[in-house]
Image 1 (tube, rainbow, N blue to C red):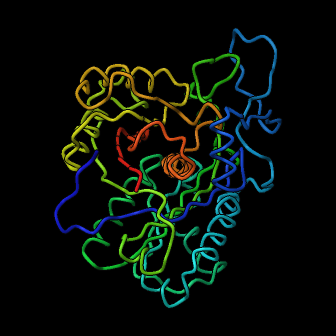
Image 2 (image 1 turned 90 degrees about the horizontal axis):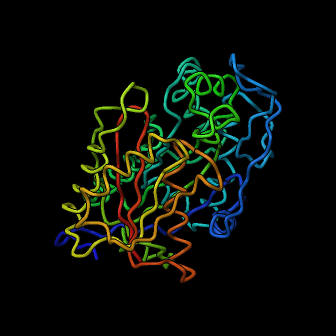
Amino acid sequence: MPAHANNAPEIVVTAVESNTPVGLTMEQSAAAIRAGIAGFREWSSYMPIAREFDVGDEPIKVASHGLVASLDWDRLFDLVFDPLTKLVEDSGLGRKELASGGLYFALPANDRVIAKCNLRRHFLDQVNERLALPKTKEFLGVQTGSTGVYVLIERAMEKMRAGEMDFCLIAAVDSYLLEGRLPIYDEQWRLKTDRNPAGYIPGEAGVVLLLETEVFARQRNAPVLLRIDGVGSGKEPNPVTGAKTSTGHGLSQAITSLAEITGYDQPWQWVMSDLNGERYKAYEWGVALPRLNALIHDKHEFSYIAECIGDTGAAVAAIQVGCASEAFKRGYAPAEAALLFAGNDAGNRCALSVSRK
């Protein structure tokens, strides 16, 4: 089990809400993912780019429950609005308490579409306008794709352990279905189609986590779902956008540094990844695993949520945390601690350890 630094306040997760292709709550989503239920549907709004050897014109499959209609950046707000408002209402945090915490957002990484709309500024402005929440001690957004939640968890832990705030809301949202985004990744041969079976199914999700110091959570009788043990990071020199396959260095570095930070004393037996169907990610895990022989149990449980909800970009890490929390709460977790990891297109790799409290 991971060890913890002396006198450092423990950081726990006390609530998770979500809006995913397989559920409108984290409870529904985790149950569907555990059962292997996939939220895939044909997306008639976009046809894959024709290649010279093509036969037929099958629509692309996406992961979406189809309840959100807008295709502009408002779609992101629609995905995360209900989980965020429900979690705040159910948390028992009053306006005075909310003003003493943090509110962070993990947003889609920039591509041609996202960069044009100045997403971070517009999105955060809309949050202030529509939610009418009190001003928090720290209000920020990052656009590092699938590693964003890990980056924000690490920042929140530093702030809470320094005594600067007692809790932090971390919201994550992404959608590949925004108008104009699918052609970008189709051009790069990233999407799963009849022409490219080793691609990913584009998805979308909005997820919100509530992190607190354990002391603050106990004082207000909040349920503790799991403990955050630590975050590790690394940098891959051959990102997926380049011409070379991954070296596995960044992922190995992230998991090794995590082990050092948490002071682990036995191999992780449960691993939850961001593998999404792309050869690049599968190859990366394949070359990294032998280097992590002492850190990963040889009979570990390995899971990847993309097989049910596709690639959810900036939301994937929050969904991982939510699935782990449900597993711990309901008693079907295969181990007392879980190793979660993800990597973004720029080559950043992050790993997170969570454990049953």
